[in-house]
Image (cartoon, rainbow, N blue to C red; front, top):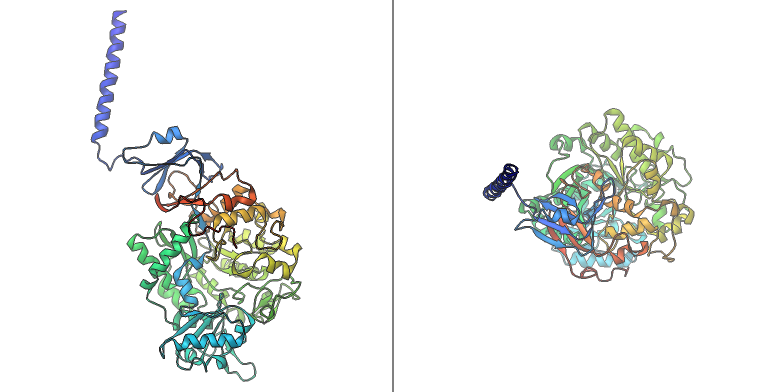
Length: 607
């Protein structure tokens, strides 16, 4: 008995010695070998958005990545002497939101449209007077670049109208699409070859009208028109990111021309990016010299790091309709002169007629010679040189079909590489859905808000029955296609992911005269599906689902804290009752507020 007790005592003493040695060794270990979490968030509702839709109470972050997720008692054991702890007090945490088409969040993109001012063009006379005042305030010979609305007053203007008000200054006026009108001085400076597609000419005389579309507009906007030094745009870009961070946005995917790329590179070098940038480079968009650029540039798709990356290239609308895109869906009535004369839904500029009364085979019967003078050519070229194409503007069902047929033609030449996408997508047909599934194309959706395509507009033109079938996200899920979310504008509240989550869940829209009316209940998403749309599935758009989109160990530590219980508030109060109160990117807090609604936007429901 004594021998047995003695053995037990010696065993316990040995354990104590080993334990002491272990602790001593730990305290003397070099910091490169062991590190505690930098940050622990606990006592909350962590909605991981993983495959099981797991919800836990705590998460640990180290070196910009999620280290561990789980319940409070386990995660808090990881806390070290320098670990920052945040008590969530029951608040919800979701993965950082990803917007897959928010080009108005890029300062260079905004500058491209017009950096000298904006003209309202209430009518032709007042518009010309506005232009005259802006030109008179500009030194002679200096370029005047203006943003203009898409309305009949602007479209009625030619270079003969603007030459008298801007005789000594090259003048460029561009719509929210890419329709452009210029004066003679700008035409002379640009030296656009006379056979360039999209160069407007009088059908009777052949005289240049100053109206530019497609490739002709591309030469003017990307090559001829001067751009400001990129350093001047740094403060503006930082402010744009701050606005996005305040709504929980942590990654932005969008078209970016050279000016934007230069801005991002500078912020990246300074380590001052507060949102991850995924740029679809615009070097091929509206470019009549596509192959020459592809040869000079080489394939940069996928180049970059966790903060700034080139994720493909992009082209202009393949159907030539810059703004809303060609549609086979018949209109009940036209909205304005703009509908019948200048594109919008129902017009294919390359064919010169609308689609409301035509068959779907119009484009299929177009000769190769015509196609070679459109963005179709650049899509095939991109694929030949190894680039993927994404961020393509396509709103109407026929516009989408033409784009997808171009993708299909490219795939037949050479299997598509990388992640290909097509954006906006309110209208679909069984053919477009089948093509997306066949080609593994990722569709990006918005809910009737940006670009003027609001519910009231759509109801007026198409009627309630057709509108109820638009934005068919649930249909896509049933077909096995995982869509993503986009805003396409920084106009508040449309770029706020929580606003869009509410819209996709309720299928309502406060813009409508009957705010409580549901448009297409059969296309409603569940709350988790709507969250996936902005996070897990959105990460697929740039091919980064392995590192973004969910709160899982090893993934980049991007998240948003919501001031409430994501699952408890009523569906039609998601946006109002769940404001973002903290945004973390790469484990660093980039936005934080103690207010129930962000202080920069207290009027959350005032549209």
